[in-house]
Image (cartoon, rainbow, N blue to C red; front, side, top):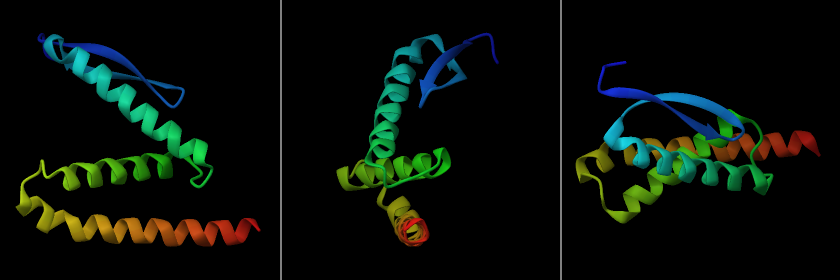
Length: 104
């Protein structure tokens, strides 16, 4: 870590992470971590997604989708990553539906 950064503890789904962060960005980091934790907790509570990795991927996809829908991203990035995100989302949904069938 540089001398301008401090380790900040963030809590996401009952786990603690130390993140290097400049002092002036600490509040923003803590707000972001709380927002992410809330999104991941909502996904976990739905019972549709099992496993921390899958919950994290679904939260990332949901947040990426929200950013893209809000139009606050360069459209060239949308052209580059939009189809990839949609493909990943479809693969995750397929895997989850197959997983649910195995549980029944």
